[in-house]
Image (cartoon, rainbow, N blue to C red; front, side):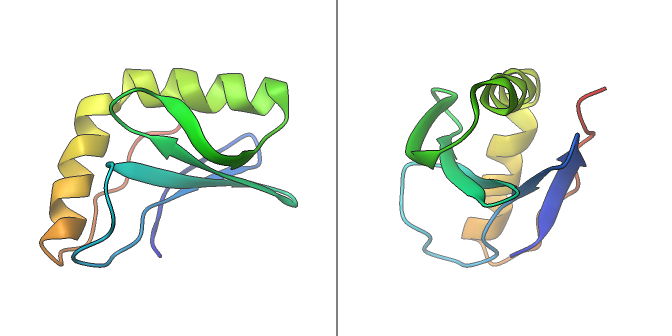
Length: 88
């Protein structure tokens, strides 16, 4: 699962697997926490995350929603996703 971005100890990954299950989403990791984020709604759909880090991830997702959807299309076609600029 390629890492597409990292910031403030948060790792953003997207499965590199055709036929990944909908909805379009990415996986986020921070220490022992992990969650799945819906790209279209920028909401946590699975898992748990500390409040501060969750706010950072959701803000980043809103800023990069188009790029995340483009990466989703790539992985659905069996292609490697592009890196996305971290939150600064």
